[in-house]
Amino acid sequence: MVLTISNTYFWYSNWNYKFMIQRLLYILCCFVGLYASAQQEFHVFPIDHKSTPGTQNGTGHIDNPWDLQTAIQQKTKITSGDTIWLHEGIYNGRFVSTLQSLTPKSFITVAAFKDDKVVLNGNVPSSKTSVLEVRGQQIMFKDFEITFLGNFWRNATVEGFKSVSGISHNSGIDCKFVNLKIHNNPGSGIGSWKRAGGSEILDCIIYNNGYITKKGKGGGVGIYVQNASDEMRIIENNIIFNNFYKGVQIWSANKKAKESFVKNVELKNNAIFNNGSPAGTFKDNVIVGSGDRNGVNNPKHIRIFNNVLYHNTKVSDGQVSGDGASLTLGFHKNAPIEDVIARNNIVIGRNNALRILHAKSLIFENNMAYCGYLHLESSVLEHIKNWDFKDNTYYTKKQSSFRVLKDKDYSIERWRSDFGLDQNSTWKQVNTYDFEPVARLTKYKSRDRTYKVTALDENGDPVLTKFSGLGLKPGMTYSIYDVENLDTVLKSGTLSDDFVITFPMQQKEFIKPLHNTKARKTLSNFGVFIIEFNTEATTEVPVKKKDNAFKRFFKWLGF
Image 1 (cartoon, rainbow, N blue to C red):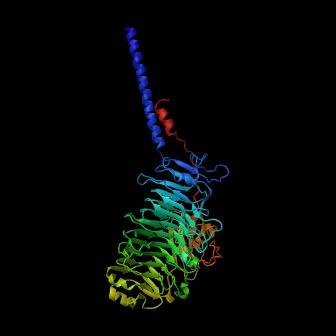
Image 2: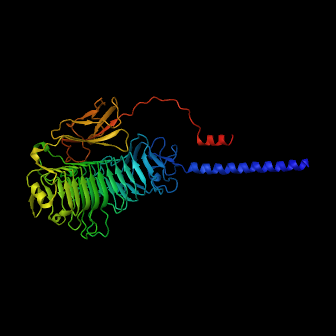
Image 3: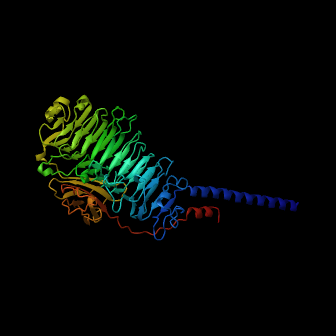
C-alpha cells in the first residue's frame, strides 16, 4: 500500500514538473515572439567607410552594416515602426527605395544617426533620373542632404546632359519628407507625383536646383506637385529659393487629361523667393494650374495659407517694373481653378506679381500684394460672382489697378461696385508703401527649439522679433543662420528678459555655388533666417535602474 502511494506520488510529481516546464517554454516562446516583433533599429554606412563599410551582405547591425541601397530595398527584415540609421559620410549613387509599411499610421524611418552629417551625392554615372526615387508607403525620410557634389553640367545643350532631380516620389501613399536639404541638383528638387497621395513635405530647405534648357531658359523647379487621391498633400514650413525655374508648381502640363490629379494640396507657412533667378529671369514662386483642354483636370481643393512669396524688389523706391510673377492662379480657360483659398499670404514681385487668370471659385482674403497690377484674364468675368475677396491690402502703380485683359482696368471702387468684392480691403500706390516691418515666426516640428523667421523691412533696417510665450527662458543662448549662407553663424547671443532678438538685414557678400553668375543675393529688405536655441542644462538625479523585461519575468517564475 505504501509502495503504491509512493509510485502514484512520484508519477504525479513528474507529470506536474513536465507540465510546468512545457508551460514555461510556451510562455517564453510567446514572450520572445513579442520581443522580436518590437521596433527594430538597423544601421547603414557608406561603402567606402574606413572601419565599418556598408555592404549588401551585412545584417544591418552596427558592427555589420548595410550599404544604403541594400537597406532601402529590404522586403522582409524591415517592418512598420523600424528605423534605418544612416551614419555620417557621403553616399555616392542614385538610389531607389521600395520599403513598405503596411500597418496604418506606423512609419518606417530612414534618418541620419543623431547629429551625423549625411549626404546623398547623385553626381555619378547612372541612367536613373533622380538621386532618390521612392516607391513605397508610410516611409519617413529625414535629416539628411541630397545634392550633386563636384563639377557637373547644368546646360542641356551639352552632349550627354541629363536632367536629374533630387527626389522623385513616384508611388506609395502617406510618405513624409522631413528636414531635408535638397540643393544643387541639375533637375527639380522634389517631384511629388499623382500616385503618392497623403504625403507631406515638411521643414525642408530646397534651393539652387535646375539647369538651362536647350532654348536657353530655366528648367527645374523646387517642388512639382500632383495628387490624384482624396487625401490632402501637405507642403509646410519649407524654404524654397533660387531654383532655375519656378518655386512650387501645383500643376500638370497634360493637354488631354482623362482624370483629375491636380487637387487636394495644402501649401502653408512656407518662404518661397527669387525662383528663376539663376536662369536670369524671375518666375512664379507659386503656380496653381493645368494645361488640360478637356476640362477634366481642373485644379481644385487647394489651400494656400500664411506663405511669404518674394522677388527682389526695391519697395522703398516703388519698384514694380519688369517680369516677376510671384503667385499665379489658373492657367488655361478650359481648366479653371475651383475651390481654392488663398489666405494671409504676402505676395511681392514686379509688374505681374499677382495673377488670377482662370478661376471658377476662389476665396482671397487677408493677403498683402505688391505689384504693378492685379492681372486677370477675361474668362474670370464668367465666374467672378463665385469669388469672395475681403480684408486684402493692394499696393499697385495706378489707381485702376485691377486689370482684366481684353476688358478694362478697374479701380477698387469700381471693382467693389461692379463685382461686390474687397469691401473691407485697402488699396495704395506702390510709392506710398508703408507696410510695417514683418517677422513671421514658425516653429520647426522636426527640430527641438528651432524656428524659422521670415523678415521684411522696406529700408533693410534690423527687424526685432519677440520670442515670448514659446517655452524659452532668459539666459538661453542662440545661433542665427541666414538660409542663403547656412555654413556660417550670422549672429549668436543670449536671450534677454524682454525675449526680443534683433535680426540683421544688411548681409555681407553671399557665396553662390550655382555654376553660373546670374543668380543674385536677396536684397536687404528681405531675409529668411533659422534660429536655434540651446537645450537647457539639467541636473542629473540618480535613478535606480529597473530590471529589464527578461529579469522581471524570471523573478516572477521564482528564479
